[in-house]
Image 1 (tube, rainbow, N blue to C red):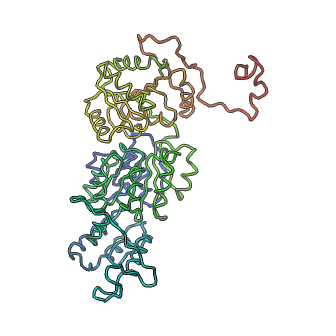
Image 2 (tube, helix red, strand yellow):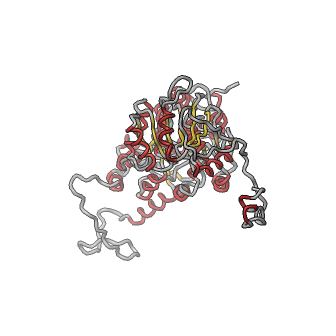
Length: 533
């Protein structure tokens, strides 16, 4: 019997958000992950794309940080009521709220002004008290025009400051100095994700829930204005969703502190922990409190990142809905052997091909490079196809506009690079075309997972040229199944194409340490041409 969201332990505020999202029954990953997160456990979850992983971590962490959210708002309200004067009860309210949270604990102290005093903030507060003058009316023995120096220290050189042009906005530090009570609260939970599209996808879920809970989520990512994100952070937030690059920029300029983070989520953990993103992730993790809850979610958790995962998590609950490399049953996979020169013609013919009596209305095409994306867009546009593109060189506004047009059906084909394979959440995609075979087998799983979502059937076509046989075989070894060969009826294929052997194995052969060494270099009877190959 299927459980309901209420049976998973979610409170009434979160359940109202669930209802607003239109969710009725939890998916398997939600059913297993949500109780574990609410219990305060670290979680390692892998599930196929389109199975509701975002809600599986977003719903429970918003509930977990609710006591901190309430305490922060109480403190702000008391500060506003006091008009900047002494605030009675602020620290007590925060302490009571924090102590009342089940399974939650703060390693930081509560300061006299009601703020959460982390070690870094305590050092700053101590320095300010030590260097402040005893009284404003106390006479000074310093000569006129010279700066005063702290007792026992060498006189400090007066710091030169550039005069701001008229109309220029004050810096964050200056705005805080002008209003000492304008201390931002939070964030108490952090979600780090690799792409802007995924960040926007998470925002779409958490914003609906926050409307019901009264909490605030802030999204920071590249391609958008710094000042707006800084203003949102200065107003305080409960949940921060970020891409690594922009988050590090904000941290370096002291616009955000991660000292109060209680829940840390790494979305698409396999991509975030590989060599490309790992240096940035390591810097972010180093800025987090040691006592925190860690959640790692992804469609695949390959063995290559197991060591890093084990180091980050403490006695985690493992939620594995699908084995590594497993593709969705709702996706029909097709392998299309073709030469490189005929790929564009084959795609054009495929767009006119009828499946179950109709041509595909919404097609997502993946290319290996940005230049391939742009070249294919020009070709399709000349052929009269409504098309748009998404890749890293496109401005964020252009990427958002292209995705919105694709969702609305204003463009029939969206051509993208692999960086978009994890951030395109569009329902009703009829077909995914791998115009180029992905070099990473995990990207193949993510690519074809863009179709066949929410129980619908989708088509996946992979164009394989002679020079792409090797990455194709790695995909089949990874998924542990063969992609069936499929030919477009009536298409005149080049005779130089290579059709894979239908009797090939989906299991990678293992060789002994000295396998093949005895026959290497002995003519046609040995080496790669020998009978043992």
